[in-house]
Length: 117
Image 1: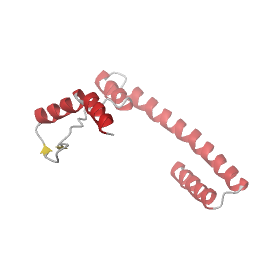
Image 2: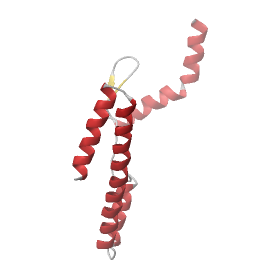
Image 3: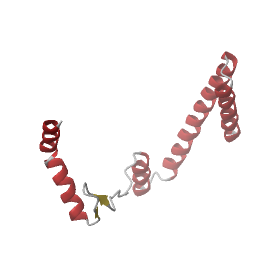
Image 4: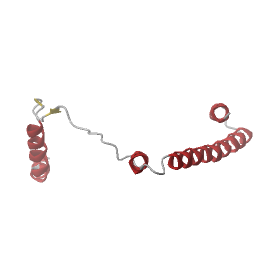
């Protein structure tokens, strides 16, 4: 039933955006508040049930805590970098060296650019 209410809220939002009248805004605001309250309650109930179910399993509890805090084991790495001269750099050490060169010479490059202007 909550999904249907949220779908209805989306319909009211669409109505409000396409024809912004005070009545449409009031209707949307009412459904937005209703859905937010009930989604928060459902979320709290879910986590309460989860932590009650795993009250003796600290590993599961910490997995959920880390998931909630976005402390996952994701690794965002740069696969390839294009130099100022247009060449592609792909090895991690070369990428690090390229960043090092750029940031260590940024003041000199800006000074040089101001002199030529």
